[in-house]
Length: 220
Image 1 (spheres, rainbow, N blue to C red):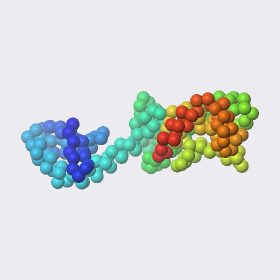
Image 2: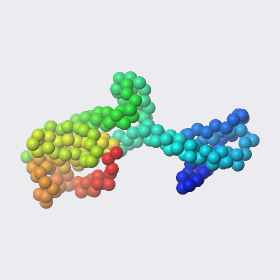
Image 3: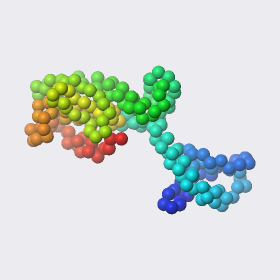
Image 4: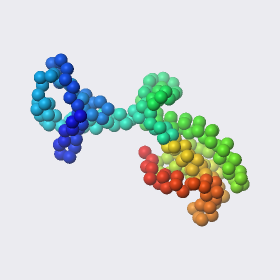
């Protein structure tokens, strides 16, 4: 595979020669596929790319974004997403997630999947979490789900409820445990004092590493 560079920008490309009359430019998995006649000179292709570089680069970047839009990560595992029209539902088969939806907005579809994944996973982990907090005289509270842009979770003292960011369904499940224990620690200690971290250490002894990791993760 070659790479054409101009003005600090670059486009990876691959030339495929077939018995055809014309030359075709198509975008494939992060590179530009150029299909052309065996007699077409490389200089002709490069010259054409140079003349139309800005247009090629714009379409190349747009194609890359579309590829990213068709990828989804759930619980630390990336999947290729294939969409069909229909009542909302989805299933994972191998590394592919097949989703039916009547809407076309990929972002909204992903957010809906994140929410469904969170509901399923919370139902699995809550019994264990409840057993742990019970040891420290912390009572379970209502848990709400929402896609948040600036934090992974929060505890609302007045309403006695925890809000979890559905973005957590993109990460390893251990971070869901951490956020749950973090917010439950706030039930007894509302600030981030030494007492709070001592309690969090009791609830989840290895919490510091996960707290450190989350600080490096951008919510997208």
